[in-house]
Length: 121
Image (cartoon, rainbow, N blue to C red; front, side, top):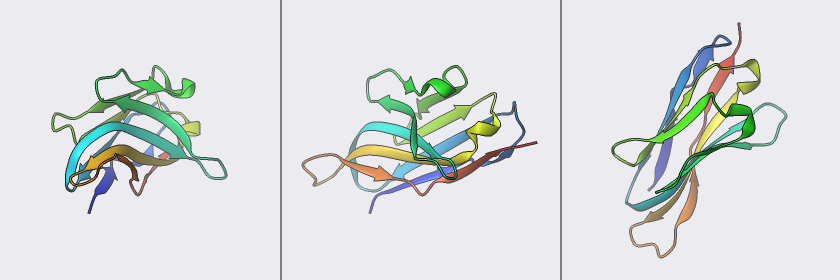
């Protein structure tokens, strides 16, 4: 069974920082891309950052210059460093990945359970 488990969310004051982590576990053959999404109350889920294997990161305009997506040395982890946080960054943040499992012929998309980030004074 494959799992994506996020951690690192919490309450932070405006201007502060948080680092989200996501670890993939299971019988994984390859990870082609990892993503961070977020969903604020009453809003649609939004793609925040993308990191494809061998590619450059991409960000939604609202977080450019403030957020950084990176892969861990183990390659089954992805981080989202969030600096200069604003109240409008408040949301549940979800890890997402395109992964091919051992025994599968094609990659599939998988979601984590989400972690709450609240930016408030």
